[in-house]
Length: 260
Image 1: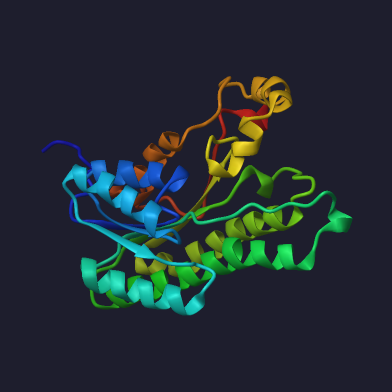
Image 2: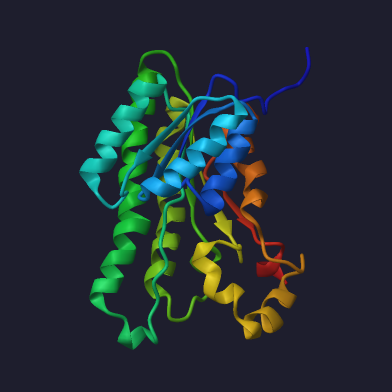
């Protein structure tokens, strides 16, 4: 019998912020590996475009318009997805926003709360509801599940003028470790991914900056921006049975930037 742990047929993966950027890069790979997919996004337009693309892979696709900062919306959407798809095996909390300030001393409270509401509260709500589903399934004799939190290099490096964003991403790492320890008995594993400089809408300003192109990207040993597709492999691995004993870890995907 052929070794095929990366075959995701029969599995269902839900990705928040899955309608573009890193989220869509992961969803596409998951669908190509055979998983049925659920995408959450706040934009109906982007959801529709992503859904149309994903259906070409021959898998079931459910697109839900969800603001992850809205607790009630997350609770309702997770329950709806579980019923519609029959189960949820992998949940990737990828939805996030940027939001810095001219300086830390000028960081507005409203901006701070806005970043935390999406990047931390949203992850908390998403994984709490995912765990409810996975624990219930395990108690019914069907254990297993994979939770993946998208953090950032900002969690482990100094992100000047981005203290709120950095705080949320550091918190995601800690949350995943706690979830990993508590839920291992149910066959549920939890890991974090830390992207480096990735070409997405969030980094559009840096991509257009001549100074950034001349001073930062040349310091990336891979000598290029990362792309959403660079996250497909790790998403498939963590969603697959190949990672059944891999939990509580952090995966840095940055073209070796952070170690150079």
